[in-house]
Length: 156
Image (cartoon, rainbow, N blue to C red; front, side, top):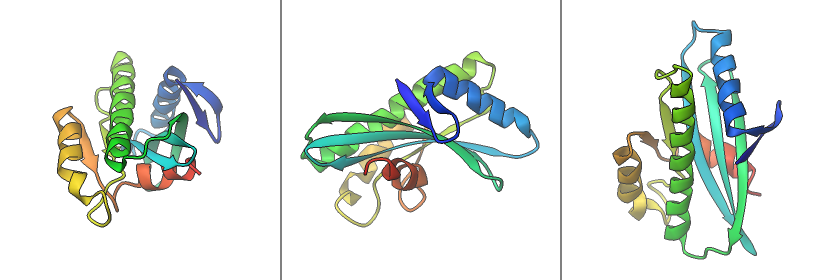
């Protein structure tokens, strides 16, 4: 899986993990939030983007994203569940990498592209259950900037 960073270029997930560890070690006095979110855009094919954001609270952030194109996925429910599964898979791999480096303290928040308004409101309970049942914290719109801002930017 290849990620892209606006400041670092092409990176493997392992390199992303190392960059996150370097970033948080630069200033250990500040709190950090690690976010994973996915979004999709339906065209001739479906474009899925998964973003990883390390937010130095009050002092900016770094982000990384990966893009995947698949055959047209017309069902909104199918797309939303696939987005959530991409985020869940990425978060799980990232946590494993960080644990290997002794960083059990960086908890991952998964941002979901669902909200109380619109067609996705009926899926909230199911999607959150899937994420929370896997051991991660879940956020929905409008608190889901990882999916609705960062990942969304690269689906266009």
